[in-house]
Amino acid sequence: MHTSSTAVWYLMRSTGVVSQVLLTAVMALGIATTNRWSPRSTPRFVTAALHRSVSLLSLVFVAVHVVTAVVDPYAAVGLVAANVPFAGSGNPLWVGLGTVSLDLIAALIVSSLLRQRLGYRAWRAIHWVAYLSWPVALAHGLGMGTDAASLWFIAVAIACIATVSAALAWRLAGRQNGKRLEPQVA
Image (tube, rainbow, N blue to C red):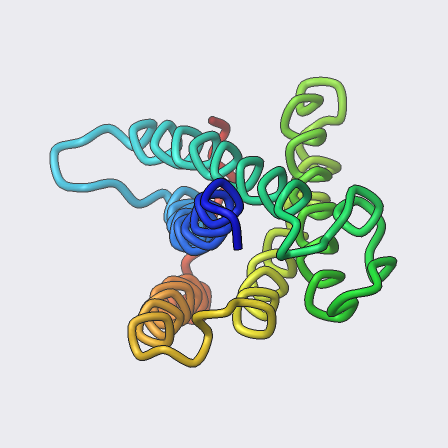
């Protein structure tokens, strides 16, 4: 592998892992925002603002991950496979899952940009795809990632799964305790 190819390959791998961690934080913060949680003595809008900021940061890392996957000759993803699910020739399932997750994230972005025109109900319905996008992205990393069998990667994946699982359990526990969760407009 050529030195510049090696650098691109490492950048692709690292931005994929960072993207998964950031997307995990986005999921947890989104759930916290829905549950109207905020740290003590902090206004609730701070959680929503943090959710938006981490979402934007995750988009930067996802974009770099996708671009490096397309330009890296070793990855052999290609522009079509990065945009059309399961269209690639090399590892079509795992690359396809990454593409599905990317397409779902794109729907989230567009709906967020058009939130005022869509209305809350339509925006919220589209926003539910985040619950599908996150595990699909995780499966992409576990299946495609060259580090998927390494202890550190497994630890990161377990931490991500535990974080989202805990956030979901907390959200569901609030509903079961009879708390009606009102939408928070951010």
